[in-house]
Image (cartoon, rainbow, N blue to C red; front, side, top):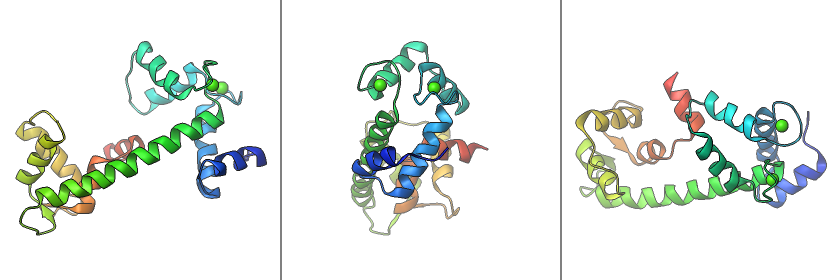
Length: 171
Ligand SMILES: [Ca+2]
Ligand SMILES: [Ca+2]
C-alpha cells in the first residue's frame, strides 16, 4: 500500500523529504498489522517485543500516551510522524553534545579516545561508574575498525545507536 498524497504532504509539511516520508509510511504499516490505519496498543506492544524490548503494560501505556497527542488511544500516521521528527531532532542534538564532549575528553588532541578517556566521558554524562566488563562491552561495540581506540565518529555512533541498529548488531 503506497502513501496517499495527503499523508505525503502532511509528512513533508513536518520537514521530512519524500524518501523519508515513504520510509515512515512503510514503518507505520509494519506496526499497523491489521491495516486499520492506526496503531493500537496491542500492535505497538507486539512490535516492541519483536525488537526485544520488554516493558510492562504501564510502561507501554506511558510511551503510547506520549505519542498519542489526540488522546484517542491509538497512534495515527500524523502522530507517528511527529514522534519520529522529535526523535530525529533529539538525536541530532545529542550527537552535537557528544561531539563537544569528545573534544573535551580528547585532551591530547589525537582525535582518538582511549578506553580510559571513554570511561571519563561516560561518567561525565551522569552514567554510573562502569565495571571493567561493561566498559569493555561498550568499547568493543564502538571500536568498529578494531584499532583499540575510538574515533569521533565511532564514539558518537556508539552512543546514539537506534533500536534497530542495536538489534542488527546483536544478530
Ligand atoms: Ca491497527
Ligand atoms: Ca491518536
